[in-house]
Length: 261
Image 1 (cartoon, one colour):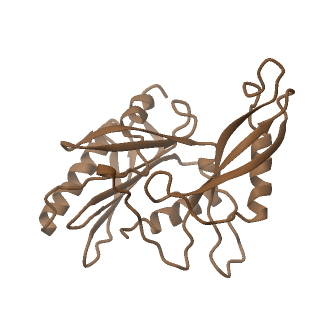
Image 2: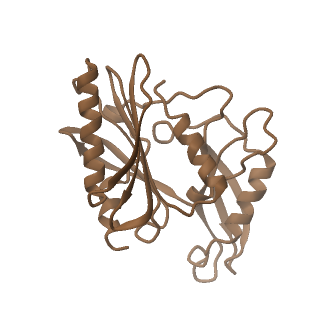
């Protein structure tokens, strides 16, 4: 999958706040927001997990490092502990001395009254984000990447905002969205659009596409673009077609709650 590495280098973007402003997204009250739980792992001299502490809970669909006043349920903490015990922690305990490290586990809270609670979004478990400068459509901003096993696994999320662009008319908004669609497809070696949905509302233009890469048909590219008179937002995921049913459900929820606030 060598071809996939430059894609990751150029496209991996998540949770961007442009010009220093954090962009928040909206969600239905009955549909809890996906989140990331940051843990500190304490590792013994024998590379065994001694304990883990919750550092903070981060809003998955908001600006970087937006902390949520949320206490993860015990069932999630127990599941996260089991996942942490599977990690290779040898490098943490150096020279026979205990150490500590940070990792994340994604959490999709169950909706009120749900009989099938989702505990963890495993496709994101263990992924950490990083930020860098971004120049996009002649606009500068901050870009954060969030992916897992970069260069080896075909999974990442992308989120950024494009402020200060002419978006007053429907035609302008559609032109900006179309340009972004083509840019993303070019970065996955001229990906092929499989389906397109117009989800536009009265005050915003919304387009979602499903696409595939001609170089690797097993990858599913899903993009949702939101544009109003003020900002442009884009959420893109590239995942294997072999996601578990639970992870697929979590992706559905994540795209569903992707809205302007």
